[in-house]
Structure formats: structure tokens, C-alpha cells
Picture: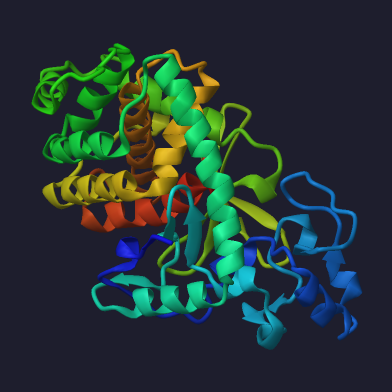
Length: 379
């Protein structure tokens, strides 16, 4: 069984006391975990209702305070049932993904992840050791079957691209993405919906480099992100834990983008509110451009992102070349990241995105990125 740990390499990890960002996710319990919780008389803290709208036959999820706040077992940002916390909690911030191999992917929304060291790799191996070979093999077989079905359909429609070729061309585009107009060029190229087929890699990269940036890039970013956060249910909004460990939400409502602070009990307070056109894409420093390009490289190596391209290609009826879809999604993700960085800058009255703000934007963005629909599965 092939297992890829490369996403965890060169990262340290140490849980930050008082952060509790992972406690804002709703844990689901296995049968064994359910028995452990009910044996302690915790039935009232369990529910059949899941925040994603599902309803299970038995109470197998932990209630969130106020319906969208922290886990019911969190008090003053400290877990009250730490000794029996479920695997869902124990494995954070590492996610185990299956497509054609097992890949361990870090959730970069976690502030406890730091550059350098090997702490996260050690933690990831401990996470994987808790999962049986049988479970891993089962998930891998199911995901591999879906990937095979996608490949058959993509070949039938003449839109297939081998994953190594996809990644090879994308890696060659990273110097373009380290330029101030790189995101616009990549998006402009994808918007032309070219059928790339077996065009030599160097020609594809040259064509992207020569593409004009769309005149309406600012409008594209504004409309896409307003729509992305136009969600009534607070529990569905991604959470950004800032460097002061405040829990922040972004919500679009009544033609305003609202910056909301979330409390443990689920109560919320609107801290700032902007008209959509007040949030403009700010210039990025050289450090910020490098950080954006490095994050693009991270997405390129993630199997989940590859599965995301498979999913969208299938949803669109296999009408576009897979590489075109892949580049469109990569450019859109980076444009959304740019908008997110610009919003964070707006809340702190900054007029340029520096390296610090670029890193903060990734913290604010990465959890939502990993929730994108995909062929393949996290488990």
C-alpha cells in the first residue's frame, strides 16, 4: 500500500493552549467511542443532527454549543473529556486521504503548525498507526474504483490528462505564479477553455506566460467571494483563528461582507462590515508572492486537489480538457486566497499584503480548500 508523507515533511507541530480551533468542528463518533461517552452519562451532549444536514439513526455526533459554537465538551477553551476524545479530534491537524494511494495532508488552518522540524511527520505517523490496514485498504479500494471510472469517462470524451503530466506542467508554472500578474494569466488561459491534449509541456507554459490578464479580475474575485460566503447557517462558515486566537467568521449578507467574532457558546458579534467593492485586491510584496507560489505548489502535490479537478470535470460533463479544468481551479483558489488576504488587510488598515498577511490568509483559507468536493475521500 503506497503511503505519501511528503506533505508533512519540514513542518513542526505543537498544539497552542487556548486556540481550540479544532473544537469548532463537529466530531462524529465510532461505535466504540459512542459507548465510551454514554458510559459516562453524556447522552445529552450527543445528537442525531449533523451540521452538514444529515440525520443519523442514533446520536453519533457531539452537539455544538448554541448549534454552531464550540463542542459541548469545551469549557474556557479546555476539553473536559480529553482522555476519551474521539479519533476525529486526536488526528487533527493531519487528515488521511485516499485516492490511488494514502496521503497524509496537514490542515494549514492550524496555528500550531510551524515551518521547520519534523514534529508534524512524527505526529502523522502516529495518526496513521491508529487506523487498521483493513480500513485503509477498504477506503483505498473504493476511492481507486471511482478514480478508474473517471479515467475511463475522461478518455472516452478525449479530455484525459495523466496526473504526472498535470503536475509537471503545473510545477513549471510556479515561476509565473510568483509574478504579480501570474494568477490573472493562469485564469485567463483557463477561461479560453483550450483543448490541450498532448501539446508539449513547454508550449503550454509559454502560452500561459503570454496570456493577457482578464480586465475584470477584480470583479471576478469580488463576485465569487461574496457568493462563497452568502451562507445563512453560521456552522457552515469557515473559521479563521487570528494571531490573538480570536475565532473569526466571514459572512455575506444584505450586500455587505461581515467580519464576525464567534464565542464558545455560539454567540456572535459583527465586528466590521464592508460593501463588497470596498475590498480590493491589494498589491503583494515579493515575500507574499513567493508564499502564494509556494502554496500553489502545495495544492499541486495534494491528491485531494487532483480529485477536486476530477470531480469538477465530471460535473461539467467532461466538456473541457482536464488540464484546463485543473488550471482553472488552481487560479481560482489563488485568486480567492488573494481576496482573503486583502480582506484581512482591510480589517487591520493595511494597504499591502506582506509575508505575514500572506501566511495569515493561508490560515484563513486552507480548511475551506480541503472541504472542496473531490473524487477520493478524507477519513
